[in-house]
Length: 264
Ligand code: KIV
Ligand code: NA
Image (cartoon, rainbow, N blue to C red; front, side, top):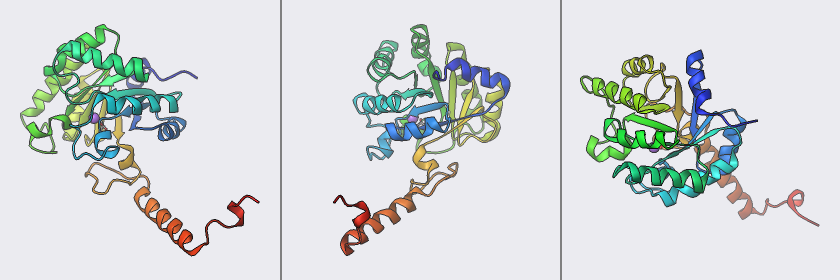
């Protein structure tokens, strides 16, 4: 079968069908999520934290993310793969944004890109769209701006909700095919969702958005101190701990390997 396209996602909104998005950073998780039917995989710059161990998304580079993106493309056959543009790789100019996006598409095979911000990145969005690059927006809590926002906190309460709505409408007008709404009040996310014809993808944005996204380590219960909006559908932290202890114990005791796991 063919890959999911941005057209499929637009049609899902017209039909009122909700869909999931998950992050992926390697081939094996990409294959698992692809087989499960997840239509969109995001190679998030959250890799900075969950893959590379930084304490924010700011330090990760294009060169860090390109091989992860290529692995996710190779591991999947049906999902649309979206590459997150890292901090500093697109803000300087539309030309910089196109150069970076072209690297993700040519060198890693990404099908779309995501960037953070509203009106301040409209020239970037317009050039990318005119060049044939599908663009996903990202509003609300934009982690690349954590130092300007004063921490990881809910965005769009009170008057700033109107600004977020204006940003969302401008992104749509500039040609974005979808927009992530992160950590915003459910009521605001619902108003944005009904006001836009492009799909909204919520994370910590309530139940009214057209789609929902989670970082897969959060979804699987691997993250130590998950945010309020995270639901764990697995117990991977406990599973890994249990398995690593059991393996260690059996190596020390000599119970592993037994005859069953031995060549004669
Ligand atoms: O980097 C990321 O994982 C993201 C999602 C949380 C939307 O941007
Ligand atoms: Na991100």
